[in-house]
Length: 293
Image 1 (cartoon, rainbow, N blue to C red):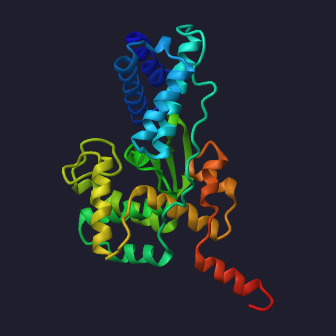
Image 2: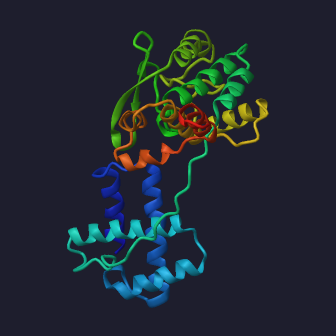
Image 3: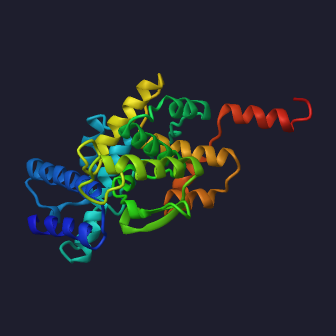
């Protein structure tokens, strides 16, 4: 099964155009399973039955893994065996009757508008790196892009005149998103004034102090520092800023389909988690609409 395992990973990269992170997750999950069945029963993937999968599940639960982790592992194996069935390497999929444990629903974390204002006010825009940080923060909040999408941005992807951004999303899909006036201004200042002085080594939009393209880790370090400088008690990350973007849009009346398009979600269900509203918004609506409020 070593060849089939390797071919499956190639299938993910080439045919499915999965991201490096996705391929890495599949690789680890399937390798863990193949090692388990070899040590536990001394069998290959082609010999696995429903009974073996059930015992493997029991083992995962005994390790007290999170439901999301178990669900991910089963999903990886289901995809692997679907591929093996297609390639006629197995005669049946042993996971057909296996039900993925339901993920516990968890509301996304987000910042209130007052906290975002506190963040913007705390950014030092007197230095070149400060102007870059301001543009970075404004862009995350204005567009809700993923960190993986942000690090791929080149200067040409930002249209200064139309105030739009070309975003290269998951699976090679591209979308245009509008950039608000505050973010557009911060980006324009950074591109025209600060970026040239950072001595860019390529066309990357966001650079580190050596002129190289910012990495995801570098962006997280910047956001951590901004959070400390603003004296915020909540942690900050690109994903939390993405949650904030979607939450604020919906709280102000944006329709779900529009937010789905802006976020680059292929499934509306992925966007529906943001339909929660803040307590302040609930109180405001109640006071303005209830006859005896």
